[in-house]
Length: 300
Image 1: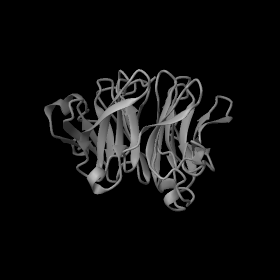
Image 2: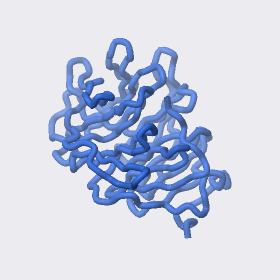
Image 3: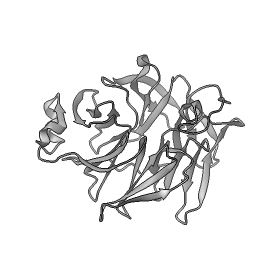
Image 4: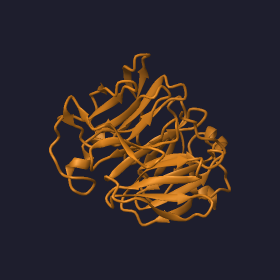
């Protein structure tokens, strides 16, 4: 039964899910699947397989999967900017990059105050062109997801890249291991997950000032299974976040209303398909998808 793919905690979740829509496995064979990004013009999804140092591509018209990029700088989180370009966090190269339409790569950020970044993890692009990213040390902790190295910065922070000047500045420096990142629908709030110790496996929410500064930072939700990683919002402001048993759905008021259950721990999600009503989930070794009753937010 498709109903076994979901767990409902609040009646509001019933408006989000199709009771007859099964979770589908679209691909398996990754070591650590991450960073799904949907490209509507080409009707394809790109995602990262970090330890295998590659990016894969799933094509909607055919269902075929091929290698998008290898080597891939041990890429992790990915997104698509307002001009339809791929923006990636690269553990191995310790940078945030943009793939131009002609295939060339532009470095958005690789240093702060002259020091190399740790290993950028996830990224969000605001409508004003500013690029926001998290920078924990997972890619330099060992040679499994990048290259072992000492942190030059000495901390794990959240950064903003000024669109006009390219200036990189810290906007939050009180995280253990900042990870997933996304804006609210109106871009007046920024959500960031922390995947450090058991005490910090939660999601925080900040108010975003007109000048790009952050305030607040209260805990929005605490993960009940494993830890939150990457996440996305739907068009009504609900948060669909990865967790140890699949994807947890939170109402904007902070209530856990339901789950999409997976047989593997989930790392990240993205909305895609022609109507943005298909949730793609990168979960350890596999890529999964499920059709929902709701639509993903158009982020740019």
